[in-house]
Length: 403
Image (cartoon, rainbow, N blue to C red):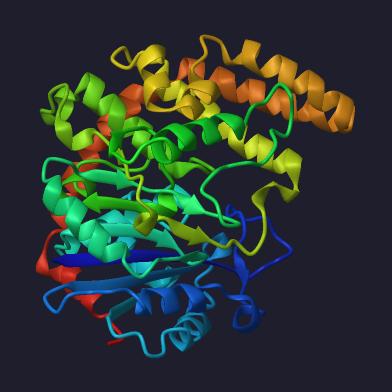
């Protein structure tokens, strides 16, 4: 069986400037602080059959989309790949820029998380990979990961999207205390994990998943894309968009309702859990963490609220977490008590400004039909995939193979 593993490496080349990534690795300290080496060591330990083919596509991108450090980035990444027995490709910012310029496609970008996830889909499609595994550079795979995955794929030929959990500090449970009484950020995630993993040993339909442990068949990657500009949580955003296509169809591309291609499934198997070892926590700057999350949830609410197929009740069955975050008639009413509690904990002026920004974002997505926009962009994405499936673009990617 042929597998492609897309590994995103986020590298900070200007630590004095803001960047869209939660915990990029400093280029200046990459040798000492990178987590990629441990990830590659775990991949080297995978059990594979002689007839399996695994290719690693390592996408090493500099913050601020800088193209001035590509040679150094490529060199540092290459040093982490000693003894790796698989075919290896490295793409950096200039490579992404070249693909974008040659194709003219808005879907080829290094701007942020969803754009880089889409790039993984596009590269895999161009290279005709059958099974796509998206991970990040701070995650460790268990030895039987691919063996168990092969078993799942063979037993479930009618399923196209699988998600599986992270394990952190020895558990898949999400036991972090909710940061605010009014903002239940973590407890519904844990409830999802309990019902889909702890209390079940069966594959179940779900909207719950992590982008750093997602398995996709190519047919899916050529029909769906991550909604752009999501500041974080792009995994949940894409699974939601896919489910909305399942529930509503998309007449612009001839997709009917209840196309099984767009359903996603949660894997409750120990072999499929990824050990997550981030170098730092995204929530250490809480106000920034909160604002990025709320912007994301408002954007997801903006796409959910403009469609008719998926109900709040059905969403609850698929994910307590997504229901808690976006299943509201009015995001202003949901947000106000959270802001009130934050005002008592943090500087009132700073929270006041944060509130104003978020209210403007709600205004924006009340007026802008994000659902219609996604459906139109899906049409453009599918056309783009068709245009990029050519020898020219395949050769451009093949030229990035290091062995």
